[in-house]
Image (cartoon, rainbow, N blue to C red):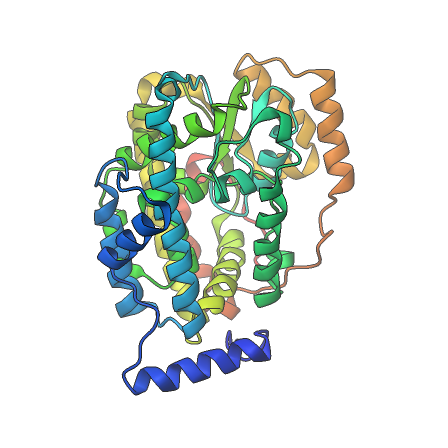
Length: 415
């Protein structure tokens, strides 16, 4: 498997080749230095209050890892700089808006529904279905991508940022066409929490997009409370002019943060999805491989496979430990198995609502059924992968034995 030659447009390959040649001559652009990025963000916005300095630790760790480990291509350096600069600008604008409207800080976030679980375990379809309930408020991709100014109810479905965000996704698919069958992205689809905590530079999203193992090792040793506190401020910003009855949220990254999640959202309702991890790993590795191939010409599939097994085995171990320790929060968990998501998603959601004593309206059911009808499995093409593609074998399943036993997870036929 070769990320460089198989799918990249000719123009991108030329840009990367030219950039590599110039780099060997000592020309390196763009710069990925923390001070230069923060100064640029301040210059672009005319603001200087980032809402605290905790984010700088993660930013500096990430930038070091990008420079030393990620083997960024010219395109990779350009896109990384643009992405990180955007997060910094968002912080400045959100903080400034909060100071101008101090009532935002009083905005309540009560009993959010939070979907956690390994990637590729049904989290996305549940997220999309729950977002169909008019009582639920999901952070959509466009408002997460361009959060300032906060969205307004009157223009929520017609905001010009929707089209602008969709153009970015369309560009991403042109750079990596394989992504279309792997993971659907759209400006009006719900967005994961990793895109929010990325503004605090504490997000597993970066390790998915770039080969930054030192950054991820650092992240795994941190308390996520500061990132989740920023996450709460971000949600308060989004709901300021367009609120809902409750938030519905999702990210596999929360597997590693369950204890911290309850510190920030003590009444959270957790939907924990389950599936055979050995079936999940190559699918997840293929997603990571495709994303990293946009920014680097040196992506090794076997290395990606090993990294993903190690990462998610560790996250699951932390989740099991947290669930053992959260003795007073057991009723706030609902365990959902992948086969139930596939067989009867509406019935599963009905059980979820019953468990958390929520009311599921006929309108919500109708919208959910309509979404399923418009989005059948395989609509965007087939996603082909094998364990061997990423240097994995059935023996890698041993890392997940305790998890499978804990939740009675049946083994699936490996791809």
